[in-house]
Amino acid sequence: MCQHYITAAIEKADYQKLKDKSYSGIIPDCPGVVAFGQTLVECQRELVSVLRDWILVKRRRGASIPVINGIDLNKVKNG
Image (cartoon, rainbow, N blue to C red; front, side):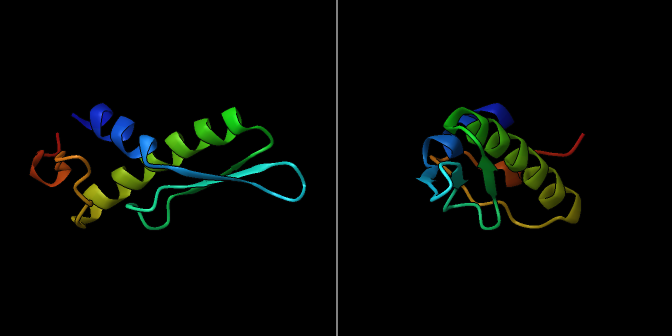
């Protein structure tokens, strides 16, 4: 289920090409999930990594994770 969530979240990502020709990416539904890369592919990979860590931290703290495309990680037990 977590991989489905990650895929759905990444599909909603917004990317910008910066003045120095590098890229930034955010997932609007996941506050604080931000990544940078020298290429778009590098930025996308970093964004996936940041999102995974963000989910892990949210779950460990018992914090609410936004539902994306009907995927609710809040109902999945840690384990």
